[in-house]
Length: 235
Image 1 (cartoon, rainbow, N blue to C red):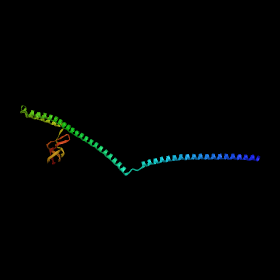
Image 2 (cartoon, rainbow, N blue to C red):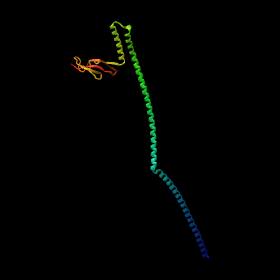
Image 3 (cartoon, rainbow, N blue to C red):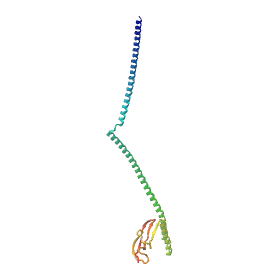
Image 4 (cartoon, rainbow, N blue to C red):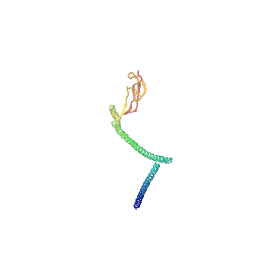
């Protein structure tokens, strides 16, 4: 009987051990299943992230390829044509502006030339008017000298009157800037003198003026008339 009890006890202990081992094995299986499920989720997340990364790289690569895509000869020719057209238009505008400035300058110069010519003419007329006014006084004195009531038998008085009128006339010309050229005894200068002939002279050296046939005149530094002279040929 005791042996039966022991056998039942061993049977019971064996049954308990089998249950515990089955439970342990189940727990191990469950843990393994959860670990496998966790690995699968992580793998899917990595795959999704990798797919997104690949898509982004593909888009960036496509954009970069589009940016780095070389232009065709037709596009370059079109760009060059547009650039030349713009340059031509700019040159046309610049040319038009230059023509306008040229026309304005020509018009201003023409007006300036006309004003200058008019002012110069007025200046000459004014100067001539003053000179003629003084010369008219000389003419008046001549007319008075030749008037019938002023005729006298005294030739000396008449000569004195003529000398006064001459001095008045010479002063008018001198005041106007006229200067006589009287080269008597001076060296002959072809720029100022006109030689009519040569003659020997005991007192005048060779190449010098012996006689002035007609005096010359100059206005300021401008020669109006050369003096006509006779030049010495020496002894």
